[in-house]
Image 1 (tube, rainbow, N blue to C red):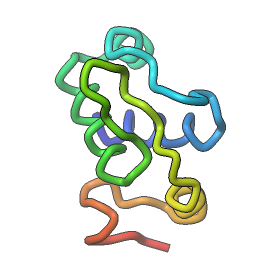
Image 2: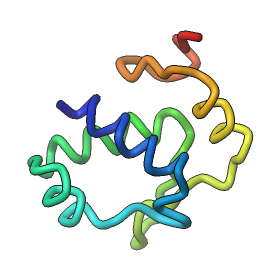
Image 3: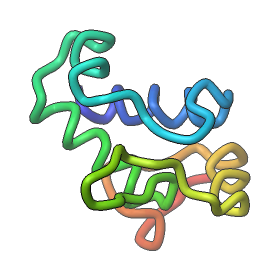
Amino acid sequence: MYQAIAQAIIKSIMADEYPTKLPTEKVLMAQYNASRNTIRKAIDVVFRHGLLRRVQGAAILLSNNRRTRRKCSTYRLDLTSPPWLRVDH
């Protein structure tokens, strides 16, 4: 389930639905009807793909790396492994 949520978050990022940061875990939990652990796993997957950055004491911010964002919009991601291990075309 976390993989489907990660894919949905990536699509939302690519569609600029989240211009600078992700919604809170609580909002994502309600949106996807999922537990905190599931949301955290999904966020971790998106983070490993370089689309997010963590700032201690702040929300989870979107990466400023447009190159990574373009790459993710061009390729179908294999969400089971980090991008440096496998990206399917």
